[in-house]
Length: 320
Length: 215
Image (cartoon, rainbow over all chains, first blue to last red):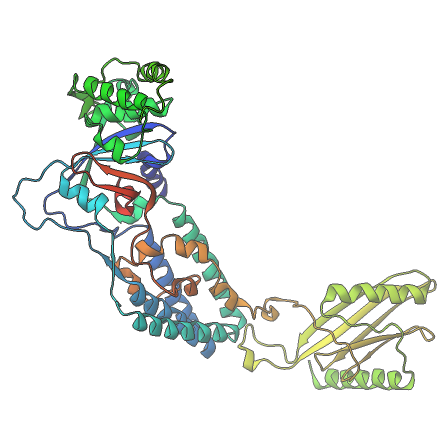
């Protein structure tokens, strides 16, 4: 089971961890009647909780069989403590929903620029963009009042203290049992912490469809149409920005995102890029066993054009 | 261990105490809390006695009566402590064997008589805590520490773990104190980056957590 999970985790690539100046295009739409974003039900975190529960039950049984009162109190305290903490920290995610279904939603394409010069272009409707990228991700706690949370923390702290004291007074046999239980648990938690975070979220209500660029040659070689093969790799930020403009057919966002410097040369470059981007469109291509939207890229040396423009404008730097 | 052996032990104890009282000396006294530190000064002392030759001391602890397997702490009988010394001198090899009924134990050498002495219940400074000899004597009073170790691993996924209802399940949890925070976060942790709407004109100087997890 584990190798399969790890393989799956490798297959889906985090846009931030890609090589610098990569451009990734996806289309996201919401599936009908699929509910909300949740925590994965039978995922690794679920397995950790069950492991802790089983250890707790085993230790309780051993304590009772050995008539070790201290160990019984320790097991009960430390187990109830996790419930107290769970109540205190339980929350629900409240992403904004569409209030009026059936209305026409405008396109709401989103460009995400990562600090390392990567671009992620998301084609989606405005409500999806708002839900995923623009709405504040507020955490709605079950225990909303701060004093109630602190009272729970107080109870939790006392349970922890009592548990630890009783644990130290348990018989050697059960102390060894506790030590082994915590060692196993720590190892399991670290293993789960090493897994990618998308495994803990149930995002099945969204469908992500990969897109790619015409200039990407790797797509021809792939049989399965794996996600990584559809990513556009570039040598410079200028080239990456050019691909992003090709996919969005717009340059207004470049200014808002402050992706390009505000110089005459760059302004001219953006104008040219926009004009050229509109000369081509996209086509659907069958890659592997699925149809992928392929952006046609006009033949333009974006890097060379920029160098040329900078040379032209080198003397009129303070025309403002 | 029968009554005979018990009497024999008592008499030895008395024997050593008497000898010590008759010939009180500070020479070769030492204080140790572990067996390792116990061995070293004994060798040094003996070196002075025997012209450089070293001996070996073995410390043991024995239950009386022998407990049946693993028992709880409160049912445990008083342990015996014992010491066996073998050392070679220029003439002969000697061995002493004694048991004392106390957790504190003094061992003292007399340079003149070359005798090894044990005397229990001493009020003089110095005592010996003996290490375990088998599993039933394994001391693990700090097992409670293990319950509070591992904050890093439990905090890594704490937020999403508390989203599922399984967080209510009573279970063992490493480092529970890490999850009792002075104040809880009010928003999911955003990432560094820029999010810009192409048509809508929206702009954020961060990347939302859920959006980042999805793609």
